[in-house]
Length: 600
Image (cartoon, rainbow, N blue to C red; front, side, top):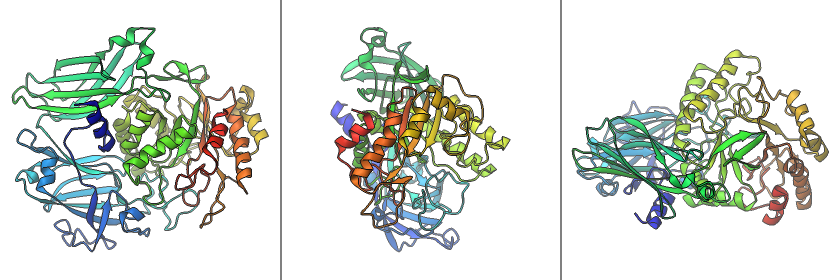
């Protein structure tokens, strides 16, 4: 495959790190029906929903782009679409590739799927992907009918829900709900023996790239796995091995990394976002049929040392912004694939080198652009609002699914399983809640030992690789006293934190980097049609600029902090503390904002 073809596939495919050449998008118009009385199952809607309206997938029905725009409570919704014979062919279905998968990027919160009236699968988790096997129904090569039921109880606060409001109208920091399908839906077909998943990790010091793979079933004798890695046309590694297990690890030695004076030209960073092309091919010895998947990776290391973040063994100051990932016309769903690219480019244009994803597991296409354009990412998940057996089980399952989905992205450098004690509000004195956040930290390290993990961002840390503080003080002098030097920071960490909560519940590593990961929140929205708020309010553009400089300068110029994260990139409904408005229009000239953010 030519480089241009590979790039084009990545920019359009729902999972850019796992691309089969043939696939068929099912986004667009679907039949749609509310089921407020929850009678659809009794009345046989799984055979045909008797739709009274149409929705544009993957936009949630609360949003304008869905074509519906109804933000009221609707706990149960139904979708219906005919998959045509032509779409089945376009998915790559053939005698050599008889397994056809119907894939969903995300459906909030609980989904069931029927094909021609037969239940083919279900899934729980509003931000994690899933697939159902429709091979038998697709075997005749005729049109088939897909029905999806999504259940999303707006009052169930044990569900991981993040910024989705439990009240009808958005208030304070919470926004309109996202119900049902909100990420792409697509078809793809594969051989009986096929690749099920790929995960990449890199060890720069040893010069090794490791592929973890999982197969659809145990292969017969003689099956082979071939991997080719190239960077800008240069062959880095090319390996073919026999495989006999359902899963395994394949280390690939990259000789170019051994050259101590030249290896840095291969490394990924925000300043040089070099991506290695990967082609992985699994060949069934019995049939001779091969399953080919195109992927990519970045070679980089992330670590801590001397109270600094170390990217590729060099101290790296984090200049981050809080990213809510919410659009007025489409809510948590991106309005288009290009909007995700533009969002990343906007952050870079403003001078940021990182984004802290907030209360949301982002679309993999967003992470593709952070990989390709060069922007560090802190990964997070929507939180539940209560601590209970259901909440623990639901959150843990979905968190591990998302970590597994995203751990190959080079731009993703930190995991944040808990934010501001959401869902563990009594962690400071409840041993069970403390045990939970400690367990999440350890589980995350078990699945991905290569990245720092923040146990509870903002305050009340348990075990944690980084110390993070949320501080919405707006007076410059106070911020300088707190963060200007080690003594000031020690005062913050040793006492009650800025939010009135202790920063750490357990002893933290003495050399752990300290970052202010929420600050600012200056509101400036003089033309807003709704009542807005911020942590401080500017009266004019000049006042806004002065207030930004007052909160940025102390953390930006601190020699003792390892980085900072400003709240926030965009206005979001009533939370009008963005550097841009909700339509991504900067509130000051980009050059002015960039100078304030970077100091140059």
